[in-house]
Amino acid sequence: MRLDGSECSQPVTILSTQSGVSLVFHDGQLHFTAGSAAWNARAEGVVVGRWHHVTVTWSATAGLYVYIDGRLAAGAGRCDVR
Image 1: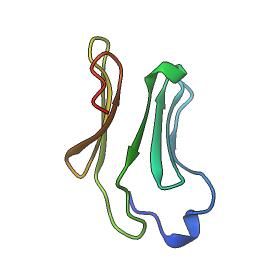
Image 2: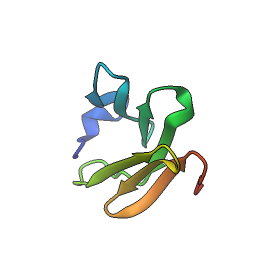
Image 3: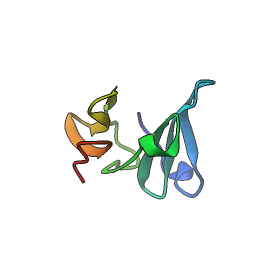
Image 4: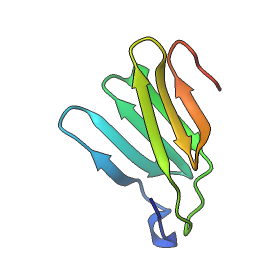
């Protein structure tokens, strides 16, 4: 993903599905939601104007994890890494 400076002041929806999965950039953070609020992780480290590789993984046992540029950025679930 790559955001330009004009997208900084308001939430930007990058992904949204009917099943409740969404990825939103707001206030310098990525907000990923899958289902209920219990599976929400915010990831810092996104620089406006630069390309980033964003990956999200989920499992019923470990929870939800967000990676930015190959590095673990945030997690929510049983094994919270914050």
